[in-house]
Length: 476
Image (cartoon, rainbow, N blue to C red; front, side):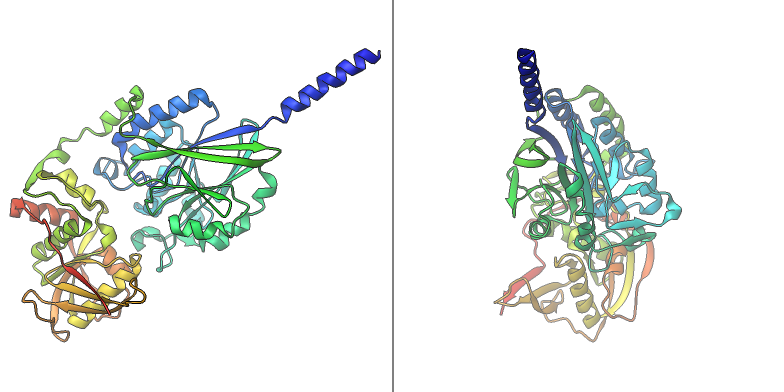
């Protein structure tokens, strides 16, 4: 009898020991994919490979899944290709990025209803009339581990995410950190707590000091390339550059109901040697639109910066709008390099993918100066790109990020007369975020800015913007 009891006790101890063994949570995360549907066959193959080894693989996104490729953005149901491909790959959850709002509440509701993954964001409250299935948090059971996921999105100085104000109607936006802290109770309920954050790398580093209850921040918005993951104040942060160039595989070791070890590695997507055949066929289907490959003009020297491409956009606004000045917000220039060769419709729609209309204003030189500064402040302190004038930014020598003064020069190189009136063309987004005082709030021209660029390129035929500059910075 004693031997039987000892045997049973030993068996029980072994069972308890096996039960108490540490577990691993494996996460594949992306951020700011911006509709790079062409890389999904490789992404799916990466997910297949990891899932074969780790069947409970959790696939997550930190937002800005859409906007950036006309094949996706101008689809019959805008952004549906991304949703269909994310469904096929097996995403479990995403937070909202600012560009998730680009088709307004009706478009977002439709996309959420077509998605097999959850949309998680605690600082956005949609009007109940939309019936939008947006969750502030979700708790998943992953291989016997309770995993709490909460999400946040950035709120700009205008009180909403960086999308056109009209797209953000029908939502209530709350302060990200203040709202996030209301979910600290997840720490007591979960083995692992993950934040899907779309506030940017610097914001997440700053936030990490005040959220010790979070184990991992899957970060997005700033397109910051990290080497695997970084630990800040005990919190791991992961983020990659945009357009699905890389993803991150993160491994969290869970022992006794808490995370005891963290590691992360980047995986190259575009050069991954395998492709998922089903996803490849889906991608080929979505990419079939010959009109987008129509050549509009020829690039004689490669564009090598946001400024050069931005000047092209501003030139288009000014020339096709018959204006004295054209300008575009810096964040509206969506890529920084284009090789010499054919300039296609697709290139133009990727450069200006937002569907903005042109706006015409009559401004004094001083009103224009103030509007440029206001646009800069609303666009994360990035100064606009201009045409028809040049700008001297006089910055504080002790604080180079601060603009002390702005001096405008006309095409003759002389200081612009601030009392004279000028015809100015910009886009609807800039007109809405620039809140500086001006008598003329602008008039819609019923002319899409992407079409302006297309018409301008066709008119020019050949383009060479190498070395073009319109901004000069002086420290004083």
